[in-house]
Amino acid sequence: MKVEAAIRRLGLLAGALVLLTACGGGGTTSTVNAASAKSAADVGGISALVTAAKKEGKLNIIAVPPDWANYGAIIDGFKAKYGIAIDSANPNGSSQDEVNAVQQLGKTSRAPDVLDVGMAVALANTKLFAPYKVQTWNDIPDSQKEANGVWFQDYGGYMSIGYDSAKVPAITSLQDLLGSGFRGRVALNGDPTKANAALNGVMMASIANGGSADDISKGVDFFHQLKVRGNFTPVQATTATVKQGQTPVVFDWDYLSAAHGTDVPTWKVFVPSNAILGGYYAQAINKNAPHPAAARLWEEYLYSDEGQNLWLKGLARPVRMPAMQSSGKVDSAAAAKLPPVSGTPVFLTDAQATKAKDYLASHWAQAIG
Image (cartoon, rainbow, N blue to C red; front, top):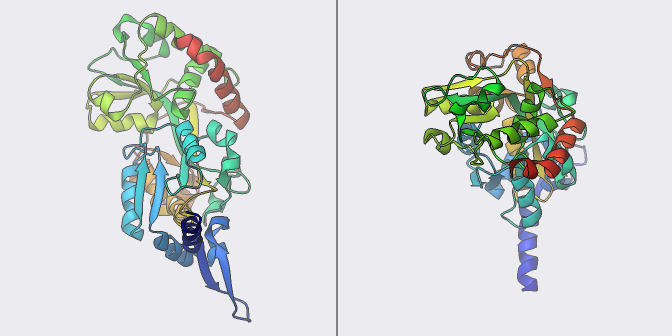
């Protein structure tokens, strides 16, 4: 068994090593470990990274539904461009589920290579991530990335209430949801103690009810009222539950909610003008990624003009959008389809996101029962 284990370790090491000819006059050959590469330049440039990733031949992603921000098209685009297989695990999982998988699967071949997580989860688990800077790094605002590349935001939007106008009354404020026409029909996209979208749904409710980005308690109180009146359902909203009519009212990001209109023509999206809460997700690379070159190539693809525009086609606002608008690289037709938002948005700081997560951890269960 020890010999077999050693052979497996050597095999993994060989797959992660890229042999490069040095650019210096000596022309010597150096060995670079893709797992420690902090940029494509560290493995000899993007072509060398592509070669290394193709040798690995696989990429493990997690908690990425194909109907989430146009990820289905992104996955297909990556596979078509590089011929690298993608193993997509637990597509409806939460940000916390992603971190749990990294911790539980350790250095096994099934561990996630990359993560797409909410900021509160990203900030709480930086020790699990490998620093990396994509080629378009300078287009990402400083406020939306960790200085060394441990995490960097990817796409975002605004928290909203999506609803099937054929099944419930029109929604013009959060207070409407307390009415009798919403009995057992109001859902979140996950558990707010684990899922970023759900946490922000509770935060939006808090801001609309006199709370603030520093105080999510009013949102917890609001959902407690929904529970007492029988209007809140603990069923996690998904494409399937919306299509089946099981969750006709959903707190979710506007770009995710708008996608339900494909299955439900009477679906509408409401962003309350008194609680415009914006938020971005973040990418991170597992420091123990079983396919380190493919993980880095995936990030390069996501932050290329092609990858960013694919997110935009999913009605998500890609982090490089301002830079791409300036350079003329943005898909203007896709940008024109973004849901309208009127008012001044609020974005949680790192400290506020962490504070909200901590408060939910100790108060949510009691409020919902």
